[in-house]
Image (cartoon, rainbow, N blue to C red):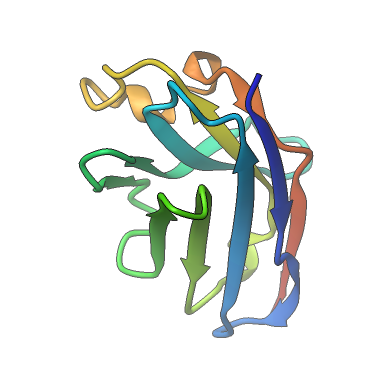
Length: 128
């Protein structure tokens, strides 16, 4: 069972930056690491994902050019660098892990139901 622990959330003003950190244990067999977010009253949405063995990255259109996902294999840690933050980025951010190696196809990376393990979340609040 993969265990995930997020950190790095906080409150910033619009235009600011934050770096989210997801520390994983028992990661053997995991192919994809991702960040999702969920704002009050909204569905959970995929923000970014990385196919960890190839380093291929995937992003939601709303964050392209502003967010960067990366993964350190040695530390089994996944990062989400967020820049030029906007109030609409405010949400609880969750780290997720998937064994499914086919998520690169057809936008599968953004489907929350295809992930096997989840962290408890870290709150990001962006004020205007």
